[in-house]
Length: 121
Image (cartoon, rainbow, N blue to C red):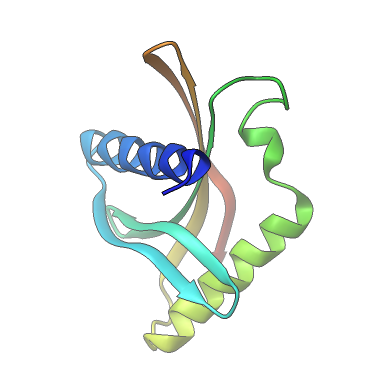
């Protein structure tokens, strides 16, 4: 496993623990459709939440949140729609959250943006 892949997995594990501690129910990790993936699908009460996790080991290339481009946002929305369509879920309140994690010398900092996008199919 490459160092970057290990860092990503560590970030996703950290994000999952963070969400569980906030009371979220984890429904699925690594939902794949076509060439895309949603890192975490969770429930926050009645809300279905699609979570994108970005992890960095330094701030040399900006914050993890800054790595989520408009193109990535469109891809997340399309993946979320595919998830709902495949499972025949309608009238389900949904949102897309973003979690940025930066590891620094044995510590980590988490930034959670709820409602990065809200929608209903």
